[in-house]
Length: 93
Length: 394
Ligand code: SF4
Ligand code: SF4
Image (cartoon, rainbow over all chains, first blue to last red; front, side, top):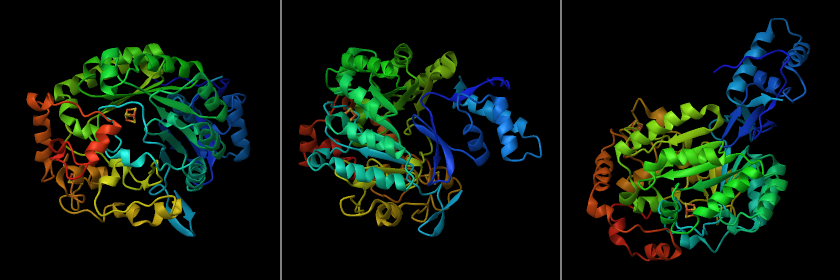
C-alpha cells in the first residue's frame, strides 16, 4: 500500500506521535502508543523539517542547501517520506 | 550506536532503560482472575512511595534515557497525585501512558491529565457481554468502562484498548473487535493470558484450547485485512502452545525497568519470586547504580549465566533462554531453559498443564479472584493444593 508522494504535498508529524531530539541517545526519536523508534541521522534530519508548513519540495531544497548536496538526495528524501507515511508517522496537513 | 556512560564507551542499545513502568500502587477496586500482580501484593499496599519520591524516580530515569513511561498498578487512579506525576513526566519529555481499568476516571481528572500533557490512556476491556466482563473482574464495571471509553475518545486521546484473552472471552474475538471499531479504537491489544501471578493459580480455569487460539488468530487476521490502517491490532500469542519461549522483557535488564509501589526496582513484573536475589529499592540506592551496577540487574544480563541446553544452543540469541520467573516457578531451576522450550528437560510440565486445563474436575475448581482477602490467605499458607505445582508463590 505505498502511497504516492507529490513534491507539493505538505506533511506534519501524525497525531498521537511525538518527534524529539534525545540527548541521552544522541539521535532523533519518534514516540507513539506502545512504541518508539530511534531514527538514523538522515531520517531524523528529514522529519525535523516535517512541520505542517514545509512542502516536500521545500524539505528537499533545505536539505540540499544544508548538506551542499553533491548527489541526488531527492530520491532518498522521497523514499523516506513514503516510508514514514506507510508507518503512519506523518500525515497530510 | 554508542555513547559515553561514566566515561566508558558502551553499547547503549543493550542496556538503557528506555521503558519505565511505574507500578504506582497495588491497590485496585477490581479483582481480575488473571491479574498479573503478585499474589502476595497485600503485603505491599501500605508502604507506597510518595509523590516526591516518584518525581525523583522520573527525573533519575529520564537522565538515564528513559522515554516511554507507563503508569500502572493496581489501579493508578486510586492515587490522587497522578495529575502531578503526568505533569512532571511531560515536562521531562516522557511519552506517558496511563494504564487503567477506567474506575475513577472522571471528567475533571481527564481534563487535568490533558492539561498536564498525558500522551495516552490504555483502557482495559474484558468482553462484549456485561455478564462475562463483570464475572472475570468480579465487579460491576462493564457499563462504566463503555462510558470511560467514550470520554477518552472525546478528549482526543488515542484510544488504546487492552483485552486480556482467556477461555471465557476467546469465543467473542470478532465481537470484541467490532466493539473496538465502534468505540473508535486506534490500537487494540489482544493479550492472551500469560501465566504469572493470579492467572497462574487460575490456569486450569483460564487456559483456552489450541483450536480456540488458532480460530481467534484467524479471525483477528481477517479483521485486520478488513480494517486496514485505521486500527492497529496486536495479537499477543500465548507461549504454552509454542515450541520456543519468548525473549522475556526483551532481555533481563536490557530496556525495561519497573519500579514497584514500594520502590523496589525490578527487571520484570514477577522477578520477586526468584530465589537468592535481593532487589534494590530507590529509597536506599541511586537508580543509575541499581540499573548498571546492582547484582540483581546483572544476574541474568546477557548469556553468561546460562547452562545447558541453552549455553550451547544455536538459537540462544533469539530468546535468551526465555523467562527466568517461568523457569523457576514451574521447574524450581531459575537458570534452566524456560520449560516452554521443547529442548528443556522440563517441557513435560507445560504439556501436563495443557492436559490439566482440559480436565473437567480441575476446570470446575472455583477461581481464586484477586482480592485482599485471598492475598492474605495465600500469604498465610492457605489454598495449598492450588499452589502445589509451583516452586514459589506466583
Ligand atoms: S488486572 Fe484487574 S485486578 Fe489486576 S490490577 Fe488490573 S484491573 Fe486490577
Ligand atoms: S534451549 Fe534455551 S536458548 Fe535454546 S531455544 Fe530453548 S530456551 Fe532458547
